[in-house]
Amino acid sequence: MDASQLAIKATGIAGHYWYASLDAGTIRHFVDGAFPGLAKDIIADCASGQGHRWKAGHDLLVDVLPRVTSEPGGAIHQAGHILLTDFPTKAGIPIPGLSANGIGQQLVEWGIPKGYLSLNIADGAIGIMAVSESHADLLSAMNGGTLDAWSAFDTFAEGGMELYAGVCTENPLLIAAGIEEIAAGAIRTYNTIELALDEMFVTVEEFFGASLAGSLVGMCISLFLSRHQPTAQRVQKAIIAGGKAALLGGASAISPFLSLGLATGFCFYEISKAIIDRKVVVREYLPGIYKVTLESCMESPSFREAWQTYETSQKLIEQLTTQHEREITTRLDSIRNGMEKLLADIEPDLPSDDDSSPSTIVEDTNSEIEALIESQRHNIEKLISTHP
Image (spheres, rainbow, N blue to C red):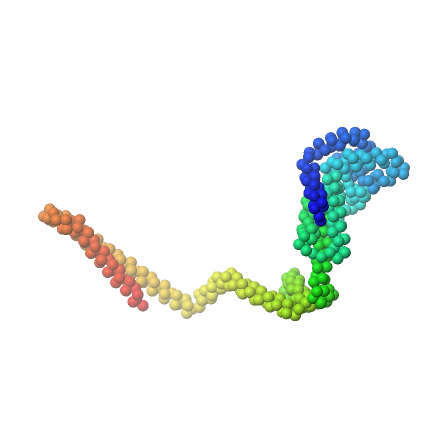
């Protein structure tokens, strides 16, 4: 594709976008005003309602061509009405032979939507342009063209875009062009592989023969090893194994060392995958394993006896701790009340020295009480640690 072809494509895309932005009624009034004598046709407009053009009267091959010999004037008027006033509108006309009177009804029954059986002037123009280029690309590939960066874009990338656009707009011509472009890319890829293999002194038959043999062996081994698994899983694994074996077989035809390197890479991949899967299994099923283990232990008489002894010891320690804390709190409250009463009695006779003020005495007393509390707590912790 050169610069002129690229410019033509850009113009066609811009024109199609402009056409899509127009109102359908505006286009209808314009074409009827441009060709007032062809705006109506009795035979073509025999049907009405949505999709009436596909139903009857607008198929150039089925509805117009048979009238050429019997009613040439009427056939020309009908063809002019279809091509000049109906084809430019967004509803378009049926593709010749694919209307309901042709094979269109059978195609619809097979599941093909009616939108794919009709074209308007914009879809037809851009579709014909795409098909003409894709056909040229296909012929170039069949004449020995190889694959490079630009041809890969011109075939695979452009073909994919045309397929997508054809499906979105229900344009069969764009779909056909996309298929041709992808086929051209596949042929260019084959030619490139063939040329590379020739430079390696390996024929295409040897390369693909080794790939096919490796694929068959890999699939058979996979099916045998997974014979106890469900059928769907066996087929999936066999396809994956066959693809890897085909790659190894083709590589072995080029160089045994290349095949050995690929086999080593596949082995390390499978080992890493197995390690990761094992970690996943452990992470998912370890809590359940712990639960089952604990339930089995609870069913053991010796374990239950040891557990009851442990619970009894814990309850005894908690009771002793609570009792000691209660006794200490009572004693400290009694000492604190006595000290406060004593300070209240002797406060009038105390000197005014700050160090011997009642607040200082109370603070010192509180410090002593806190030290006593810490001492008692230490004794309790010692008792708990030495309790059997």
